[in-house]
Length: 231
Image 1 (tube, rainbow, N blue to C red):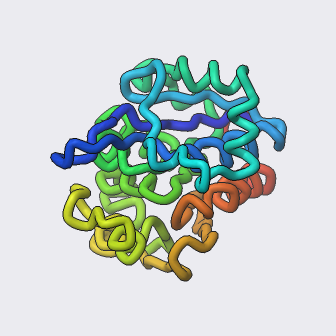
Image 2 (spheres, rainbow, N blue to C red; image 1 turned 120 degrees about the vertical axis):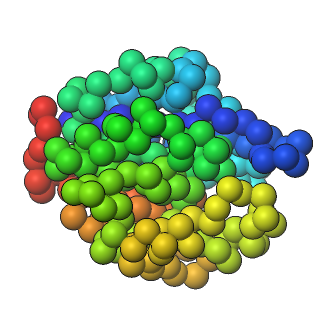
Image 3 (cartoon, rainbow, N blue to C red; image 1 turned 135 degrees about the vertical axis):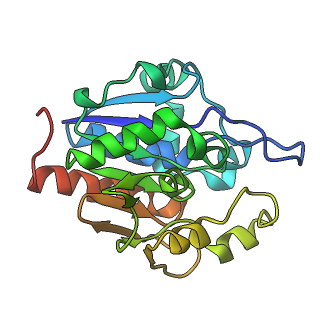
């Protein structure tokens, strides 16, 4: 079971002068869920090397058991510090692809043609494509049989009300909830900040940081029940 995780390389929060990047829990929770299930995990990013961490995700109050595990895990810290350049990745080497969020992906991965090609290649091959929180933003150019991948699919992602709660509605390039709806997705959600993940076929989406483990578990379950790809 070989899983590719793709993180953002973008660190600027629009024109605010603030910093962004990937969300720590949304990396740690899936990464360790995959490892503990016996998977081999490769972490990639558009620029390679160490991706930017959203500083807001690394506050004391934001820590979880799995982020604390990361803080005491030099091996995983080294993996994160040396991510593979996305252009060097070959889809045929992996069984599934997973996109953590943070606001960073909305600026780079959402518009990255290499990322989009990977998503379409995985999806067309029947391999799971998963994303959590702002991660589903990467799906907005992805097509299947001439139509958006999300069209007609049950999907979720960071909600309009959650974006409003963090005061970034006017800063982000688009709202994840609105975008998925416009693309024809059947958007579902629960209360803000609660765990919620959906698997519809081999497309998996999670609502927010708290949904990171659930989305990863859905991916593992899908791989176990419908083996695809190279393993």
